[in-house]
Length: 412
Image (cartoon, rainbow, N blue to C red; front, side, top):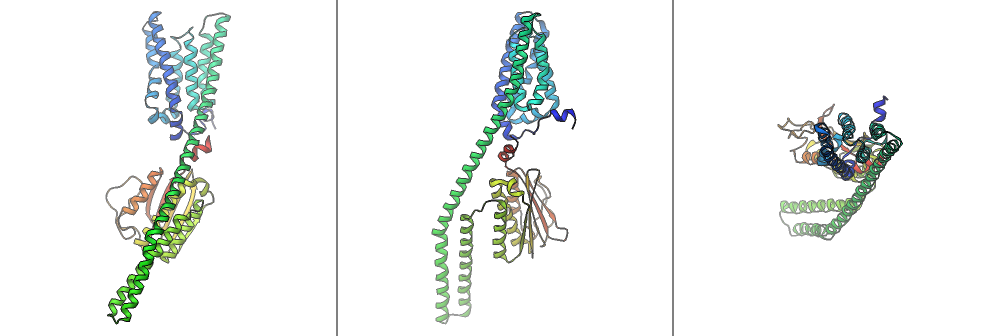
């Protein structure tokens, strides 16, 4: 590891961190702008000339632009070495019109705290070193100037540490807020599922059970009264269909009420119920680290993706076996569903930018199911691809990155 890598931020800034430190970044940028405004007034009053005015104007964009669009461009500013080096140089230049003024210490302290917020302590201290050195020589010659400069340099170092500490606290607070929101969403989802299960049990399930009994009684009565065999057969088929719908409703009720913890239990349960319903064996292979990477929020998305892909196989692939494999790498869950069915149809025109676009052939029977999988993957910040299997059939790969709150919690 070279010197530059040692000084670089330990973790790349993510969207949650960018939003968390945004208000503090804007506040410090505004403090620098106000200080520069005073510096401009001093330069004009003391006759510093156009050079002093130019130096102040040169430094202003490095505060004005981040304060204006940090929410959209903050991560670019934080990881761009050229911008960071430029801000360091301009910060030193901005101190020239403030030489000998207490405003010099204010500008240096605000700048050091700003760097500490997003650059980390080590890199921020390196960037603040020129500010400290200049302050040691920026005041009048003599012990008074030396003490004032040393105090300004010490304040700069302290504010560097303060900015770093504040950034960490804001990150932790953002993580806790995100986790609290996730917990509330999970509770709301659980309450909604239980409410839906009760409604289904009290209405649809009960009505279907009554219809199944009525259809069986109708078929028996038609048979006793000597109705045409075709009529009796239609009545029995009707009873069979109603009983199947009742069984599916009962299974849905069980899934709504039963929510096992972890991706492994959810996927195994989904595959088991699908196999029982279709008669097509579905094997499941889940890596041990998937449960930790996915978390409760992603677990629901993984189950929904697996359910949709298995339903596509049932409706359109005509497969004799299906393999479901889940693995985790680089903070993301990778879902692979492979079948030995009819395979992909002819390619369709257009695309979504998320990998190969499957056609409308027998393996998929239209694009609505695939669109739902793609949209869910996009919602999680991932992607989905369809490819022909090495021995026929179709291989679908869906990548779902871990929840941002979990990712940030691990690095905070």
